[in-house]
Length: 144
Image 1 (cartoon, rainbow, N blue to C red):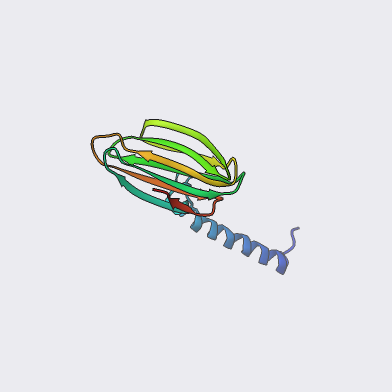
Image 2 (image 1 turned 90 degrees about the vertical axis):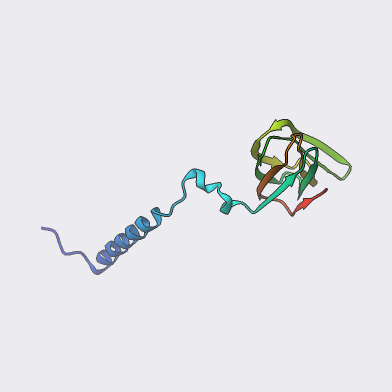
């Protein structure tokens, strides 16, 4: 014969039921994996336009070993880019591309200094680039 649940057991069951209700409510607003990298998750986002032939550079101040996650995309045409770093007498080229519409990944600072991207528009029309960044860095600076 089963005994009646104690007050502690009844309280625990009520907590479990309440937590199930909360879980059901929050599950409706849970982000999917694709949404986790949405704009809300980014620490900074900049958007800039480049006229034909124009270039600009954005860099992050970073300590050696720091990692920044980035994603950029261009509208109006692809761009040329150079991901690189400099500081303390050091310089490095991480990656270059020509005619690239978008890129994403992680930038790990090889040394303490400035690390980032140079973008150039080689199209016959203006392009707009959106750069999103999050992670371990000091500040984002437009260099030129």
